[in-house]
Amino acid sequence: MIDIDTVSYDTKIPNNVGLSEDRRVLKALEKWHPGYIDWWKEMGPQGFQDSLVYLRTAVNVGADGWAKFDYVRMPEYRWGVLLAPQEEDRVVPFGEHLGEPAWQEIPGEHRALVRRLLVIQGDTEPGSVEQQRHLGATAPSLYDLRNLFQVNVEEGRHLWAMVYLLQKYLGRDGREEANDLLMRRSGDPDKPRMLGAFNEATPDWLSFFMFTFFTDRDGKMQLESLAQSGFDPLSRTCRFMLTEEAHHMFVGETGVGRAIQRTCEAMKAAGIEDPNDIDSVRALGVIDLPTMQKKANLHYALSLDLFGSEVSTNAANAFNSGIKGRYHETRIDDDHRLVDDTYPVVRLVDGVPTVVDTPALTALNMRLRDDYITDCTRGIARWNRIPANIGINFEMTLPRQAFYRQIGEFANVRVSPEGTVIDDATWAAREGEWLPSADDGAFIASLMHAETEPGRYAGWIAPPRQGIDNLPGDFEYVKIET
Ligand code: BYC
Ligand code: FE
Ligand code: FE
Image (cartoon, rainbow, N blue to C red; front, side, top):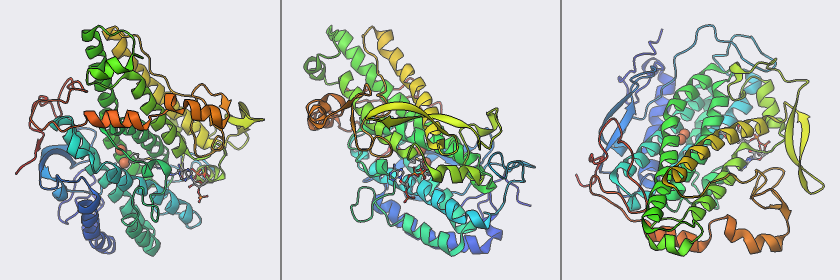
C-alpha cells in the first residue's frame, strides 16, 4: 500500500504513486526526463536558467502545507508526479456507468478517448511555457518575474502529470504521445501545438496577465470536468493540478487589476476624467483602459474557442462513457445521465445568434463554456471595483460570445462585441476599436522594460498589496546574477 501523504524522494522524480516499486513506469519516465530537460532549456524561460528563483515546490498533497518555498534554479526544480488522495469507495459519478466503482485502469473501449484527452490537456502545458519564454526580459518587477516562473514551472509539472498517465496507463501508445509532446512547438507552422490559443503570441505582460486570467481559467474548467472522471487516476491528478491552478489565475487577475489601478491613479493625479482621451492617458506612461478592454476581448474570444464546438458528439461520448463530467458534477441535482434533457445553446439561425434547445449530451461544451463565462464575469466585476473606488468612470465588459470566434457556430461570421452579425466592410472599418491594433501593441511594447531592483515596479503597474509567501513586495524574489 502506498502512503499518499508522504512524497517519496527515493527516485529522481518526487512522487506519491510508488514509482520506485513500479519499475516499468519509472524506467519510462527516466528515459523521458532528459528530453524534457532539453526542451525546458531550449523552450523554457529565456535568459534566467541560472538565476535563483524563490519558488514553491509541491512536496505534499494535503489540504494545507503542500508547498515548500525556497530558492531554486529552474532546471533543478523538482517536477514531481503528485495525485490527490484516493477517495475510498468512489463511484463513477455520471454517464452510463453511473454508480459503478471508479476505474483504476482505463476501460479498454475508452482508451482512444482518454488518450486524446490526455494528449490535448498535456499539449497546452508546454505550449503556454513556450508562449511566455521571452517575457522575463521585460518583467515589471522581481515579484512579477518570480510569478511568471512559478506559473511556468507548474505548467511544466502539469505536463509531467499527463505524461505519467500516458506512460502508466497507455503503454507504447502513451510513450509515443509523451515523446511527441516534446516535439510540437507553439506557433510553429509545421508542428504547432494542438489548440488555437496556444499558438498565439504572448507579446507583452498585459497579454500574459490576460492569458492567465482567461486561458488558465479554461484550464481550471477543463480540469474540473476531468476531475469528475470515472477513471480515478485522472480524477486524482486533476484535483491536485487544480490546487496549483488557483495561483495562475491569481497572477492574471491581480496583474490586470494592478495595471487598471495604476492607470486610474495616474489619470486621477493628472486630472484626466475621460478614459477615451487615449493620447493624454498614454502620455502619462500608463496603458489606457480602452486598450485593456481590447486585450480582454481578444483573450476572451481565443479562450472561448478552447471549449470546442457548441454541439459536439465528442463531448457527449466523453460524458456518456464516464470519462469527462460537468463542472461541479457531484453538486448538480439531476440524474447525471442527461439522456432525455435539453440545454439552451446559442446557434446561428438565418444569420442571427439565437438560443436553441439542444440535446443536453451534445451541448456539454456549451454548458461548460457558460460556467466559464459566469466565472469570468465575476472576475470582471472585481476589476470594475478598481476604477469605481478611484473615481474613474469606466467599466470593463465581456463581448458577446459570438464575437471574433474561430471554432464552432460563429467561426465563419463577423460579429460585433454587442453580438450583431456584420459584413466584412464594417468589420474592417471597426476591428481596430475592438481588438488590439499594431499601434496598440507598439505602445504597450514601449512601456515594457525590466525592473530588476527589489521593490521597484515599472510605471505602468501598481505594486501588489502583498508579496508571496507572506514576504514583502521588495523581497529579492529572483537573484538574477548568481
Ligand atoms: N483549436 O467536437 P469538437 C489549460 C477540434 S487549457 C483547435 O467540438 P471536442 C491551460 C477538436 O479537437 C485546458 N482545434 O471537440 C491553460 C476536434 O478535432 P478532431 C486544456 C480545436 O472534443 C493555460 C474538432 O475540432 N484542456 O489547461 O468536443 C496554460 C471538433 O471539435 C479546438 C482541455 O481542453 C481549438 N480551440 O472539444 C496552460 C481538455 N477546439 O478530433 C494550460 C481536454 C476543437 O475532429 N480537451 N478543436 O480532429 C477536451 O475536452 C476537448 O478536446 C476540447 C474540444 C474541449 C478541447
Ligand atoms: Fe496547467
Ligand atoms: Fe495554469
